[in-house]
Image 1 (cartoon, each protein chain N blue to C red):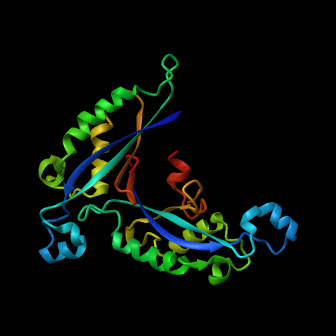
Image 2 (cartoon, rainbow over the protein chains, first blue to last red):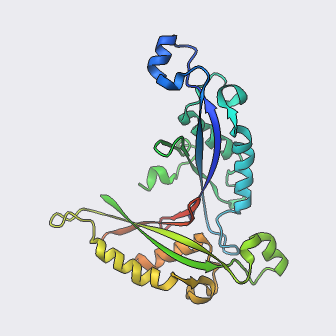
Image 3 (spheres, helix red, strand yellow):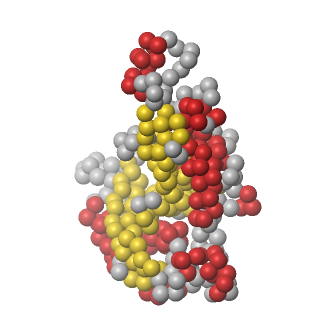
Length: 152
Length: 135
């Protein structure tokens, strides 16, 4: 089994704000991320798929297929949007990078599920800035043999 | 248990072609990677070794030894080479990043002076890499 990772980029804005909290609590919890009109990041998303190497191609997955899945599910949906208002994914959910990372994993999992013995989604790593990153490899039921849990 | 990683770079060319496919299939499956004269990359390989810290040296293994093995087993074989023509393993196997990572594992696993090979990570570009854990 080989894991293959490719990096993609998109830019979006967000505001960390929870309607259930008071204005003072929102300011205390989210700090400057609670600024009312939002702020933006250049996100880098690393998508890892894992599977056997096809002996006839030497590949784990056709990179064109991976590009297409990420383009359609992630880039087209989130690039140059205000995450709080422009996409339905964050209705009632704070668009932190944690939640965005889980959302991207779930969106891609439906496309990279490992049908017909092909590689399947292993992990999503999302960089909010070059100093902050988040990783999600699904639940233990979704991804029991995850390298994130077992290989380190 | 400590995981120690050493990084090295090499530059090589390759092309993707399976003689069992027709010329048209090769072009369809491999796209511009099928150009018969090859194309090149600056590869970065990260070798991760797992092991216990030796009480007397405070080390998992001597980095000089790891560097020497990486140099003699991998870099001398692959650096500034056309992988399809000049590296025996790729006479019959397509030198994709996946297959190169597996080959590097096979070259190094038995040659480590101490510790256990944990992972080979091979970057083809900054935005594309593969990991192989030997399974």
